[in-house]
Amino acid sequence: MTPLEWLDSLQGSGIRPGLDRMRALLRALHSPHRKYRSIIVAGTNGKGSTSAMLTSILHAAGHRVGLYTSPHLVDLRERWLIAGETIDPALLDECIVELQRAAETSGIHPTYFEALTVIAFLAFARVQCDIAVLEVGMGGRLDATNVVRPVAALITPIGFDHMEFLGNTIRRIAFEKAGVIHRSTLVLTTNDDPLVLNVMRKRAEQFGNRFIHVTEEHDSPLAGEFQRRNAALAVRAARELGIDERAIERGVAGTRWRGRLEWMQIGEKEIWIDGAHNAHAAAQIAPFLDARVPRPRLLVFGMMNDKHIAPVKELLFPLFDRVITTEPYPPRSAKASDLGGIAIPNPDDAFRAALASGERAIVITGSLYLAGAAIAYFDRQRGEHQHD
Image (tube, rainbow, N blue to C red; front, side, top):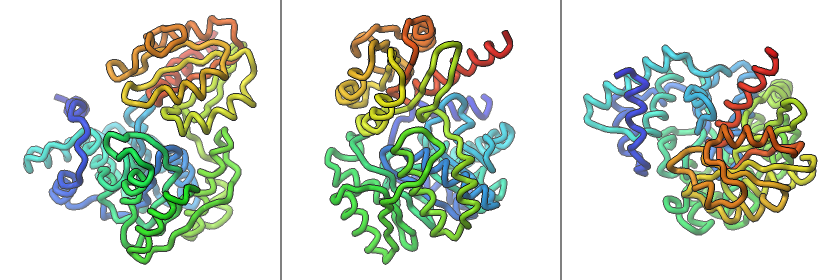
C-alpha cells in the first residue's frame, strides 16, 4: 500500500469530534505544531479567502509560510501550501509514512481530517516554516486544528452550517467557533451580530486578550463586495502582527484563490465558478450575480445532501433563466432529480450541456466539490482551445 493509499483508506472514518487523538499523536511525533507560530482562521464562510490573503501578505513580508486549508478543489496537494507552492509529492509521502508509523505504534487511528491536519504540522516543521496559517475545518473548539496556541485567531462571519455537530442556535455555533481563542491570542472578527460579538468578546476577556471588531473594508483582488471585509480582516491582522504597509499591499494584490467567483471565458461563453454551499454564502454572492452576470444566464447547481438546500435555491434560482442540476460528489450529493431544473447527474455532462446551451453566461455553484469539478473540466477546455 502506498502512503497515499493508506491516507485514502481513512476516508470512511467519519467525523469524531474531540482532540484527544490529535494530542496523543502529536506527542508521539514530538510536537511538530510547536515548532513555529500559528494563526488560526475560523468562521462559516470566507475562511479560505481570508487565509489566502493573510498568507500572501506574510509571504510578501519575507516569511516562510505554511497554509493549510480544506477542502481541495482539484488536487489533494492544494491543502498544504508552502511558500506559495503546493506541497512537494515526496515531502507529502514522507509525512504520511511518519504519521502512519506513529498511528500504528501508538494504536491511535486518526480520522481522515485529523490525518490531513497532522500532515500539515509535520510538513511545515520539516521545511522550517516560521509561521503557519490554519483554516479550521468545522466549528473550532473540537476541530483538529485547535491543538495549537495561536498568536492570532481570525473569525469570519458566522451562519448556520454543520448544525448536527455545532448546535442549532447562532449563540451555540458562536461558542464552538470561539473555542479557537486561547491565552495570549490576538482576536479579530468581522462578525456584526451583537450576539456573536458578545460570545467572542467574553471568551477573549477570560484570557485578557485584545479583541478587535473589524468594521472597515479593504480593496480585494477577489470578486464580490463581501471579499472587502475578508481582505480588511487579513490586513488588520497583518498590521497588528507588525507587517509593513508595502508588504500588505503587495500581498493583497498578489492573492490568488480559485473557485471564489472565479471568472473565465471559453469561446463566446462567460463562466463564473463559486463554492457557495450554504444560505449565508449564497446571500453574499447573489447581489454580485444579479448585477454583474449578463443575461441570459444559466445556473449549474449541485449540493451535498447534508446541507439546507431550500434556502440556497430560493436565493439563487430566481436569478437565472434556466437551471441544470447535477451531483458533484455521489453518494453524498443531493439527487439532481430532487433539486428541480434539468437533471444531468454527471457533472462533466452538465458542463457540456451548459456550453452547448443558448445562454451567454454560465454560473456554477452550490458546493466546493462542484467548483472543483468545474475548474478541472474548464481548465482542460481552455488548454484544448489554446492548442486548436
